[in-house]
Structures are given as structure tokens and as C-alpha cells.
Amino acid sequence: MDLRSNLADIPSGFVRDLLIEEVIRSESLFEELLQLSLHEQDPLAWRACWVLDGSDEKNPGLARPHIPGIVEALPGLESRGTLRSLLRMLCRYEIPEEQQGLLIDLCFSYLTSELYPLAVKAHAMMIIYNHVLIYPELKTEFITVLEDQVEHNSVGFKTRSRNLIKQLEKL
Image 1 (cartoon, helix red, strand yellow):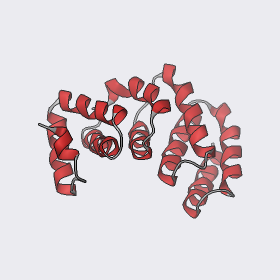
Image 2 (cartoon, rainbow, N blue to C red):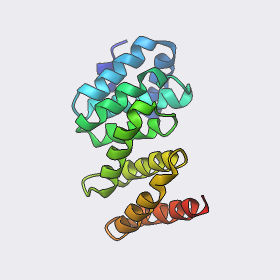
Image 3 (cartoon, one colour):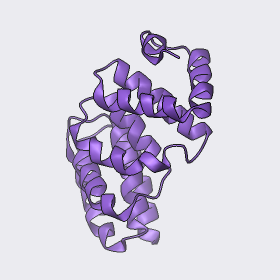
Image 4 (cartoon, rainbow, N blue to C red):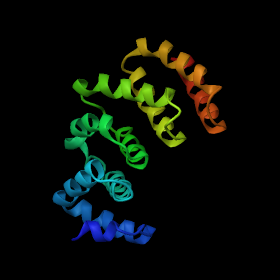
């Protein structure tokens, strides 16, 4: 299957679903999509990652062996769409201890930067929240960052932040 030509135009939902089914059946296609996601420019990178995320969502665990490499690649990503899809995918996984510090630091930087869209920030919030459950000492810092960022972000950010703060206060 020639993934590049299938991703050249924005695939319809139907074409995306067909690609997802092919990727689920072939580890090599999953790996090829991952390489396109991490090393190509937009729009090919985000389209490949959109299918990659859909494949992992439909077949949970598909990305598990690749999680360390994905986390290590995040700092070098330029594509906001790819970042959004990868963070969405990472929300579904327990992150290996060796990559947790890097991922948490990156997520805090995504939250405090004006450069990232709400979708990236929303997934970053979820990743940090999941790690607060493991490392309760992050709770105070996380709440402080959320409260500080509420003033500088969209209504969607404010709503999600308030809901997360309420959940954090119950811990």
C-alpha cells in the first residue's frame, strides 16, 4: 500500500477508516505511518498521525511498543496536528517511568505557551492529571499553572481547567 499517495489529499472519513483497517492488519504499515508522522512536514505528517491515532484507538495497544520513541520525539516536532494526535494517543497509555519526567515537563510547557492550540493543551492537561494520580506532589504545581493560565486562554481552556481543578481538589 502506498501511504504517501493515500495521504496526499485529505482523506475522507471513509478512506481514513479503510486505511485504519489496513494499518491494524500490518505492523509494518503502523511503523511506516509513525515514521511519516515524526519525520515528514505537514500536511503529510498530521494526516499520517491522524490515521495512526485512529488505528491505535480502534485496536488498543497497537502503539504500546512505540511509546518510548514517541515521547522522545516530541521535543523535535514542528507539526501542531501531529503533536495533538500523539498526545491524544499518549493519554491512553501508562508511560514508562524513564520517559515520564520528559513528558510531564513537555506538557507543562505546552500549557504555558501561547504557541499551542487548545487541543494540544487539553491533551497535555489530561496527561499531567494522569501523572498527578501517580505523583500527588505534582498536584499543587498543576493547580497553580491551571489557575495562572485561565486568564490567558480560551473559554474552552477555562472550562476544562475548572473541571480538572475540582477533580484535583477531591484527591
